[in-house]
Amino acid sequence: MIQDQEIKNQVKQILSLVTQIAPGKSVEVRIPPYAAIQCIDGITHRRGTPTNVVEMTGETLVSLLESPDKWQQLCDSGAILASGTNANLAKLFAQVSKLWNSGVRSENGKQIQAC
Image 1 (cartoon, rainbow, N blue to C red):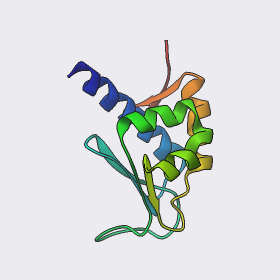
Image 2: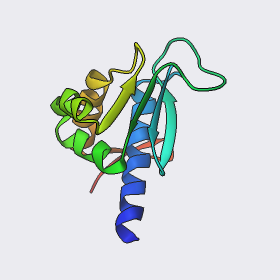
Image 3: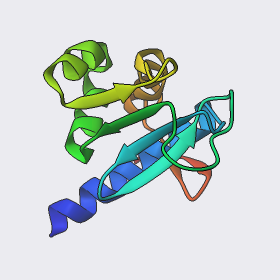
Image 4: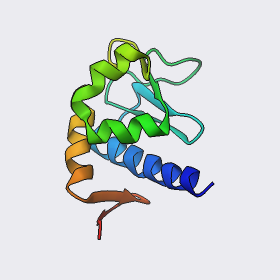
C-alpha cells in the first residue's frame, strides 16, 4: 500500500508539471487508477471520448521520465496507448523529464525544489 501511495504522489506531481508546461484541453492523459488530466493547447474537448488520448500505468509514467527517449518503444510495446493526431507527447515528456530530473517538483500548483 505504501508503494501505491508513493506512485500516486509521483503521478500527481508529474501530471501537475505536464499541465504547467503544456496547458490546454486537447489531449487527455490517463494514468489509471491515479489521475487523468487534459493538456496541450488546441481544440477543447468537452464531452464523450476525447479525440486525443494517452494512457499508461503509473509505473510506466515514472519510467518514462527516467528515459523519455523510449516513448516510441513504449508505444510500440503497448505500455503507452496513444491515439489521435496530437497524442505524440514525446517532446513534452522530454521537457518534463529535464525538469523532474533537475529536482523541480510541482505540488499543489507551486514550484518547489526537491531536497
